[in-house]
Image (cartoon, rainbow, N blue to C red; front, side, top):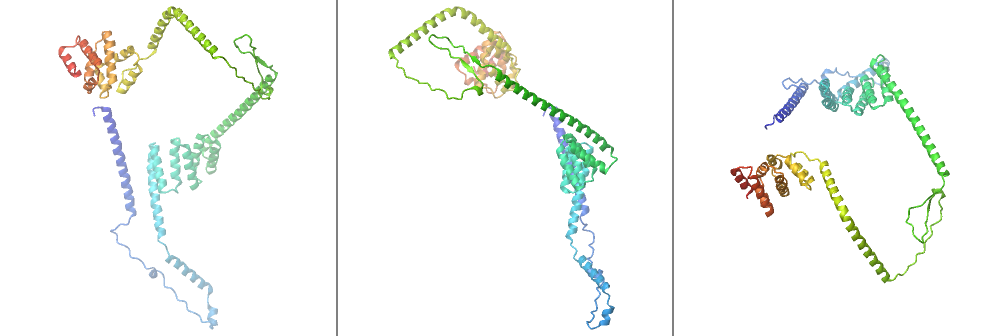
Length: 480
């Protein structure tokens, strides 16, 4: 790669990929370290299991009192007996302890610690103002542990900075469901409502902030701003409603005045410009409004067939044709002398003006551009001469490459023979450029005899400007 710009760009991309890889490796290492701390150490000696029967005090056997020993029943303490039964129930509960509860607590704690770790990474990105990356970190934290309102509030801040106000409102509401005393979420949601033009909702959030923190200066300033905007929107709404009312009243007045004017105007009669004929009556139509038009059905006309002799029709056709022929001959003889002298220069002037207005395309960079420009100018050889003259002949191989078409090849040779030789231009560069085309022998092979003679004529014309050795090389390349 010889282009230094591309090299620099590739080096920057490689550097970014390497930095991202190293950052991910560091994160993975930290996660592994935290998991190692939570796992038990195999080198440590296992503590011996303690038998709960040994630790607990021995159960005192109750001496049964016989039913006939009334003096013993009088000495029996009922309250102490009840207390002993309660202590026995508590010991049974402790014996039925479930270890799965501890496992669940450990899992939640580990997930919460992972979420806090992702949150800290997001906070570091927020300080660097990398909002999109911080959003990813906070989403990972929420995936680990979705019961912390701080995660949602921090992601809402990033959405505010990226102007995604609806998403910020959603995160703030979910944060407030977890903790409805979190002041920052109210403030952030109020700013999102302000940006969306929802002033009443923003005011409610700011009032909640003042309930929790009455001395919050920022909330007081924001409430003043919101009140001013509510007043402005109210004024605009009233002005808009007034304008709508006045417009409707004016429209109704105009409609009523038009209806009155229509009722007052007399019925107009329209006389079309028909050709006048003898023995025919002129029929005039009247324009009536719809409510004054008759509701009667139209009359049906009785059409009768009339028989005409075939000989009369033939005679009429002969007369018509002869009259047309005579009129056309007279008109042609009279107009030939006058029109030909006037129309021909007018047509030439129009063609020249059109040529002036047509803009010649710039030098093409690819074969597709050359083909399109050539097709747009193909009808005019003068414009093709100007277009081809601005292209350097030695640049033709780099423009065309392996895509030269036989039709375009023949057209270029034709323009070189007709226009360039007529104007006395040097065409050596063009022939040298064409000779460097990779598919030249195939193009010459498909040429007709007239086209081969055109190539020979061009080579004879070039012999004035080129040495004999160069001419021989050109003839070899063209195969002539």
